[in-house]
Length: 136
Image (cartoon, rainbow, N blue to C red):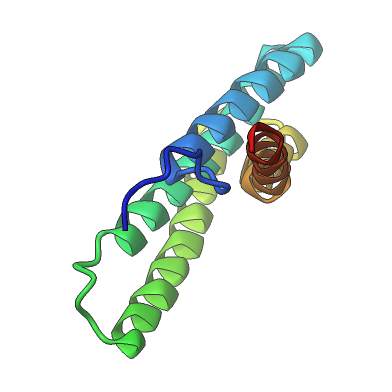
């Protein structure tokens, strides 16, 4: 089965992480309007989200393809558990280490970056599928 040359309807993990990085940058820049501490807080929240999502993607996609379904599912659950724990520890660390932290901006930066994949991925898939259909 050869590659048809048509773009994949779902973006790659790299594309999703890049979109999250762009959202992180945009949210941080917008938050800087309210002060440097607010911008810094939004940036740190988004960075925590990006780091934990990157870990999850690497851990889940690193499989050799030859494992049983149960092993893959166990790896998926374990990676999700570690991702959530990592996000909690990193967010708590930001609170403890940073002096000028805005908790609302921190959480909003985290959440907006976190949901980027859920919001942008279906939209990108729909747009790509529509473009592919019009080419045929």
